[in-house]
Image (cartoon, rainbow, N blue to C red):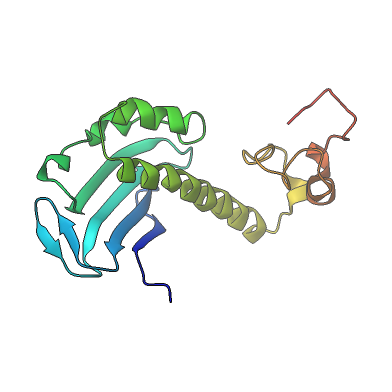
Length: 186
């Protein structure tokens, strides 16, 4: 027997807009599997949201934030509302220093830990959105990875896309570096 104690669900979706910007949506929901005593809302029946947070991060193709908005649809305290000034993320880069940008925008005690965690993950979704779209456009035009003249931003970002990996050697040999070549480290 394993009675449900806590359930957290996080989902992300991305959309390309008509103005060439992208909306990355995030939704986080926490619930308990038992009657939960919430200090401000009283007893919440099983499955009721302890946290229900929705956010939209609007970015461009260079992964610069143009807008950020969020709703705390359910939170343990009314005081949680307004914990983050959304405008503080505008202009931040997801490509470089995303974690630092979140720390600066949310502050050491400002913001909501759960919102920060969810928004950090929105950066990963931004990478998936932009890199896949660029690939789709390259391949849709009849080109291949071997035709690339500009190094993709994701090279050097993980094990398979390491410049020394056999994956890069096979698909993007123009950017491959032999493992023993110290001239171009990841």
